[in-house]
Image (cartoon, rainbow, N blue to C red; front, side, top):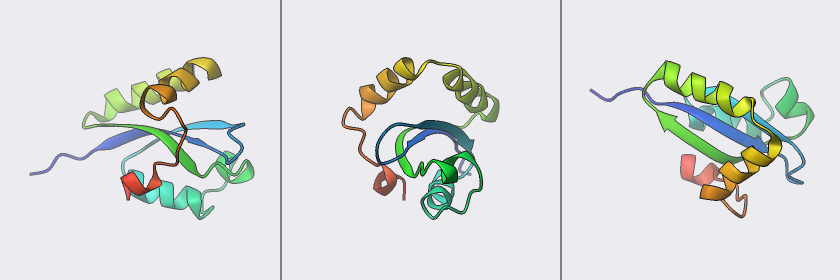
Length: 97
């Protein structure tokens, strides 16, 4: 039996001026919703549709805690995290879908 995967992810807009950190139980679906602007709110308003970072895990509470941890960070600390796996801030959409 396959374990359910949860994800914490960071989105940005094409100009890289905004960062959004989110949590989901279905990363491919959630990224699609952001790209198609199906999600009302911050990401739609600020055109955050490029996934530039994500982490997967099987522990719901652990991944949710990680999202809250990252959300509390400064922009610089988030940029450093993104840079460890995606230094050019490429859209990772194709890796996910």
